[in-house]
Image (cartoon, rainbow, N blue to C red; front, side, top):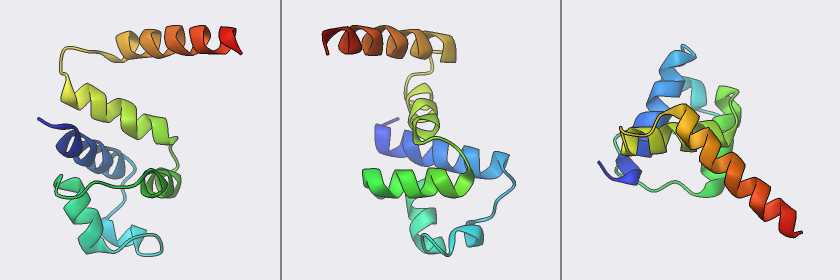
Length: 95
């Protein structure tokens, strides 16, 4: 699975977990565009990821984290969380 498809799957998973249909996003995106994203046929911009996440009431990193979990079935949430925490701790120590 590539990242584009993994992100589409993450968007769909979160949308369905919130009980939202594609029409719900008509203020921020067309149903057709959302369908294309969910099927991994388009690459959303960072702004679009932010807009969709906000519309679903989740942090954009939730979408990206789930996408990377979809991409690599070997990584679980705890492993990803630890990696991110360690990397951010290191980066913030420099500033």
